[in-house]
Amino acid sequence: MIVLTSQQMREVERIAIEKMGIPSICLMENAGKEVAWEVKRVMEENGLSSAVVIAGRGNNGGDGYVVARNLYNWGIDVKVFVIGSIGSISGDARVNLEAIRNLGIYVAEVTQKEHLKFLEKTLKDSDLVVDAIYGTGLRGEVTGLAKEVIELINQSEKFVVAVDIPSGLNADTGRVEGAAVKARITITMHFLKPGLLIYPGIEYAGEVKIADIGIPSRLAAEVRPSYHYVVSQDVALKSRNPDTHKGDYGKVLIVAGSRSMTGAAFMAAKSAVKTGSGLVRLAVPLSIQPVIQSALYEAIIYGLNEEGGVISYKSLSQIFELIEQSDAVAIGPGLTHEGEVSKLIEDVIRNTEKPLVLDADALNALVGRLEVVKGKRVILTPHYGEMARLTGLKVEDIKNNIFEVARSFVRRYEVTLVLKGARTVIATRDGSIYINSTGNAGMATGGSGDVLTGMIVSLLGQGFEEEKAAVYGVFYHGKAGDVAKKSKGEYGMTAVDILESIPEALSEGLKG
Image 1 (cartoon, rainbow, N blue to C red):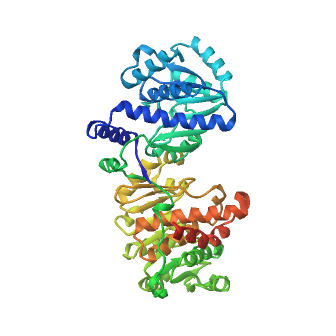
Image 2 (spheres, rainbow, N blue to C red):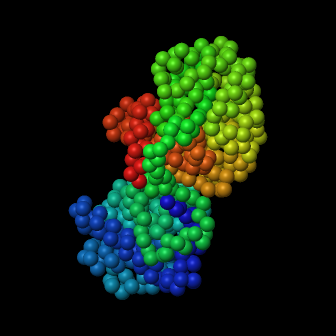
């Protein structure tokens, strides 16, 4: 699903107006009418009778005036507060402001602190608030009266419907710029915005709905969108050809495990099997080979040279022999970073052209050695902590600027990046950003990442390109978590539950 930045959305609107001849006031009318219909529905379903529209001086405020006019025409008690001087409002917004004043709708300015008391009282006496202060027109941090108004809205604890994006929320990053309205529903115009799809933006936007405001959707192609929200129709799976055999579905190798972390190796390999690999080879320290073999019947288990339960550098030639027999390789789950593991991983990466998935301890091995992956067919799967170690950035700095951090990393190292989090983000070599839509809090459990590694390498082995393997793997990993949640709940869910839910998740993908 296409996602547009605030600048791209403005450009699409400009093209619609200037090249397609769609009057700007028609777009405003359509936007306001769509929001008004949603407000009416909410009010009827919840037995609400009065609304207050809080508007800014720009086009978002103009949308709000259209909302007010329609609510008034439907017999709903509505009042309007304008943050700033009415005299400063111009253009289409001015036309719609004059229309509601001519109808006799109550309109008040909020230009000084003394006006806040009456606004506070009106909020207390009203059932619902329409936030039309900034939308995507926000410039810089919210301060002064606007900040105090936003705080009053949040303190009122009323049902809030935001127009386009909650005021104070950065439409492109999801950051709160000083203060932001906490909405129950956000009606965004024609295309999703990145800031609505990641935290903390998700918590402020509430339920997000897309309003068709009369812009031809094909115009999005003219601004070259690079953000995508991954939903089921984007990752539909094809049914398999009946006339096939296991050799048609890829041979993958997973190098994983240590004496203290046999589970990581097991789950990575088992998930690759569950995702449909034709043949899975798992290379582990020799001492844990019998343990894994007794629990995992569908994979071929190889015992590697080890030292103290950790794969040793002496196993390098064994690993290369196995790589030669494989279509794709995953390295990292449960390896630890003891002994010469880091040097071993570096030499494997340096000397193979096979597509690689690097996770967990393979990522730790790359700290200070990242140049070795540059330009390789590599998918990195760090969580925020691992990304912080790789880049030297603080976790909070990554979270606050996730898209730019991911894009800059990929630009520098020419790899595919899966940055794992509450909303996992995939950054690809062509500059695209994919935001995943599946998954839940129950997946924040040990071993979940190992399952993802197995799924991605399985798809690589089946012939998916790196970008597609990453996007599909993340989506169906989250989908499996959602399936597991239905029967186990978020508190009791384990990585094994996610693993066992992979077939059902993939089956649902065939329906898409």
